[in-house]
Image (cartoon, rainbow, N blue to C red; front, side, top):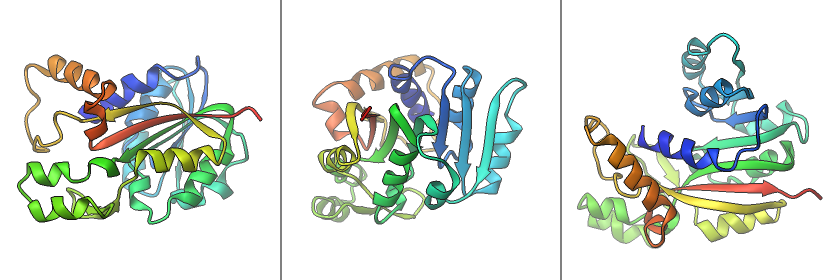
Length: 231
């Protein structure tokens, strides 16, 4: 919940006025896709899970323009025409690709000139922090030299280092506009923890930390926003 609320706030500051053509790659249950559709955007939601897409479709309200497509993210290049979207979201997906290069290139291809790419990735520059906070010192030690890790679900994944990822995006004509840290202060809170009565304070503190150095540099997640060059 904290992650989704922070990403919504951060994204809103950079989006062009609606209506926009939006693609959500790996949309999951569609939290961001549905929020943008409710604001008047035309949204294409892509995910490999039929179960998650069914959940998304059950929450579509009258008047929302949402098209759900069941397909792996790797097929993006064959499913969409070049420059067919004004905004492309890819949140919590790149960490499951050993080589995210082809997917990044496909997203750059389908994004229109001047369009916005929103990426949410695991922060490879702060990978040791969570295991250290949990008292797993072996994993903390290994994290300094290896961007591979096992997430809370027990799934093998990988992290991205901000400057390396920014450089890779620049080679595709995607210039970094801004970046934020996400879940800087609450990452060690258990997933099943109840929502606190001081939720507004929590979100305000997280929002400030995600915009402020040095806090954002140690965030477990990085929200990176890039603009595609006009040329």
